[in-house]
Image (cartoon, rainbow, N blue to C red; front, side, top):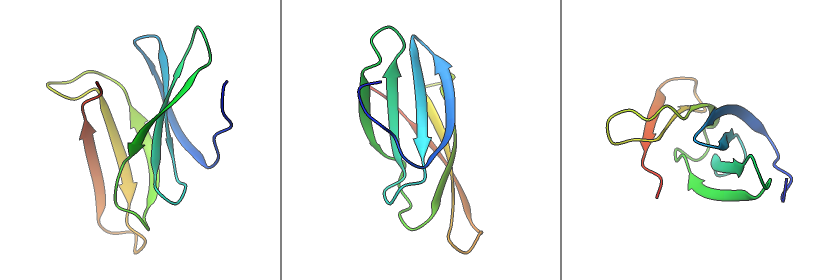
Length: 85
């Protein structure tokens, strides 16, 4: 891989990539090209202060990745749906 990812929480394999969610300070999302190992930062899953958890890369409707983020107080829990260009 072209970068070391810290606090990884979830992964999904689809469309030639490994999609990774983290629980770092910004709940960052990444995709790793399975052929080259190149890591691309996709941005934040949001809800800073909470804990980034799982990710699924099943293409559904208009979204490619789906995430789960837990609030620092444990409730609420957010499901995110994101397009990737």
